[in-house]
Amino acid sequence: MRMWRLATGGQRCRVLLFGTGLVGSAIARALRIRFQAQGELLPYDWQDADLRRAQRDAIRGALGTPDRVILVWAAGCSGFGSSPGDMARETALVDELVTFACQIKADRPAPTVDVHLLSSAGGLFEGQTHCTAASLPRPLRPYGHGKLAQETLLRQATTLDGRHVHRPSTVYGAAGTGRVGLVAALIGNALKGATTRIFGSPGTLRDYVLADDIGRYVASRIGAAGNGAVSVHLLAAGRPTAVHEIIELVGRCLDLPLRLQFDPHPTNTRNMSFLPSALPAGWTRTPLATGIALLAHARPR
Image (tube, rainbow, N blue to C red; front, side, top):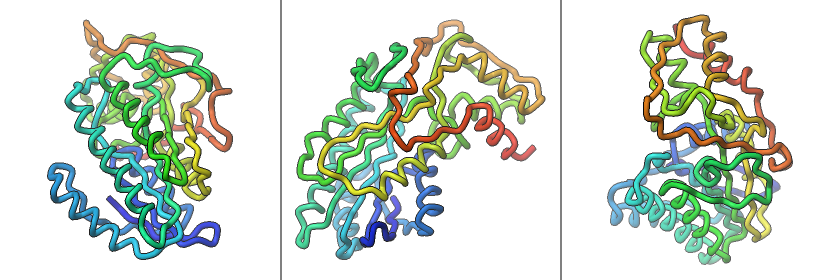
């Protein structure tokens, strides 16, 4: 994890960012740009619970006496195919993080403590279309049930000053660590002349959102003080796009043949869409064609 020292609103802040994957890296970039800050790498072992406990004690010591502490969970390696056991292990890590935030809040002198949890609109609303701000999650897989359990843990942490749940839809961006999404896979495989295997159908509808848009939004929310209530932010485009449209956009940007293999027994075919009215104030999204072009032209050929 990385600890960021920054000032906002006249307050000395520490941001603890857990996660270095697609979304975590985007948040880190946005923090550097927005606050002209550099993150300090601190060890955090995902495998050894006893070691993590000692590392959290060291992190508390490194915090000093700031006015605000913001913890951001953008970690985890779960996905649509995760098992109940996978999600139980990830949720236990989130539980540790929320408990850690409450412990920091109980310190003397007590700082203001906020937690930002990156959840998943895809996991919570799979199979639902035209979702509004009032639509209720109806998870269909262990992945979605696990994400909902993680959100519940944060909701129950009533001593915190700010509790923010961010629900990104289908995220695309420059592949870092972890899973490679459809857009990055299509681009990377086309440049290598490799075949992309697709687990949906050509007409499967998804809502694609650029990772850097999420990073900028979360960084902007970090700069705002919490009020104790739970805030939920749906981070989506508000426009569904079919898989075949993604393929066409990538093909036009690269001007290269795309080798495709559709799974004959696809496991990821349910449609999903969100209405623009469900999106939060202050959220801006890059048009899909622009985002795909940015990624395509950033890759070396």
